[in-house]
Each structure stands twice: as structure tokens, then as C-alpha cells.
Length: 236
Picture 1 (cartoon, rainbow, N blue to C red):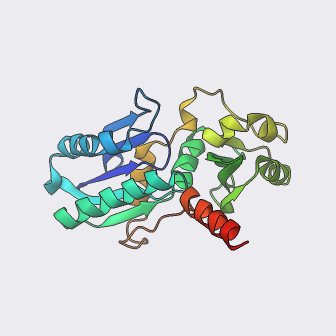
Picture 2 (picture 1 turned 120 degrees about the vertical axis):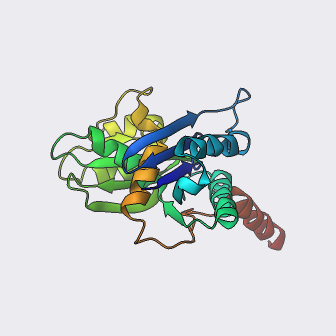
């Protein structure tokens, strides 16, 4: 059995992994650079090469998995472009994995019996990206973007208090916990996307997903919104 190499750059982290048949061969999670910016453009290629080496070289890799968001517009583009570049040079197929789905997979490992799991990422502009699953893995909320007050109201409608994780759960802890969400402490690893979950999801669904990963943005990038606002002001 050959390995899957997967990575996600939709959040502030650069997460990279190599996995073979459920066995973890290599995993790295690179945080922000010293200046406070994400390390995607400087760390991703080197970490992927290390993951490939741990798998025994590109000849021992069967598939590339990449996080497709939602999250940082630039980060998502870097991840997908890198995956497509490696695919073009190696001939390997690419599987896109939702970043919220990967975060939710980590929550699944920690959730109590009967407890829903809620993945929440900080979307900036006072909003959050979120998705929710039942205790048996049924998707209760498709990925969405909303203000924390809206998420709080939806949490109150769930059949049980969910285990919530992700940067959005940390940022909007007061609003979400106030309606019943169980949120681990800020340093808990459950709040960061792990590339092993990207690999595991790709391995489980490799035959079901298209070979061209499509980004999940949920809203237009800041630059587009600025242009639209600028054009509207000029037109007025």
C-alpha cells in the first residue's frame, strides 16, 4: 500500500502529513513566522518534501490531499496551487478535503458519546466559518459563514451541547459557550487543523471525490469587496 501526502494552509498554520493505511509516517504543524504572518509560502514546500521522504519518495505516494477551506483566501489558493503543481509533475491524483471537515474529525476523537461536534474557524470581520455534525457523523450544518450571535442561536437548537473547536470557538468563546457549547482551553490541540485528518478523510473518500479540488470560500475576498464598494462610491 502506498502513502497519501496531505496538507492544509487555509488557517494560520501550515499542516503537513504523510500516512499509509492509517499509519502516521510524518506530521508537522508550522505556526506563524516570527513577524506574525503565516508561513505557508516559506514552509509548505519543504515540509511536503520531508513528508514524501518519510513515505519513501514520490514513487511510494498514491495520492495528494489538500485542504480546500473555508479559511484564508490566500492560504487556500497557496494550498490548492501547490497540490496541483505536484500533481502535474508526478501524475498523482488530488483529493480536496474541507478544512472544517478535517477540524471536525479531530473533534470526533474527543467528543463524548451522544455529543455533537462543532467546527468553528475565525473568518475575521466579526464572523465565523462553521459546520456541525451529530454524534453519529451526520452533517447537521453545511459549511456556513455567520456572526457569532447567529451561531449561538443555532447551538441552542441542537439536541445536546456540542463540543466546539477551532480558532472561531476560541475567539467567540463567550457567545458560543453562553448557549451551551463545550469549548476546551485555548492551547488545546483540538483548535488547530491536523493534516493527519486531511489524509485520513482523503483515504476514506478517494474514490468519491473529483480529481480537481475546488476551493470553499463562502464569501468573496476582501479585495473584491473593496473594489465593489469603491465602484459603488464612484458611481454614486
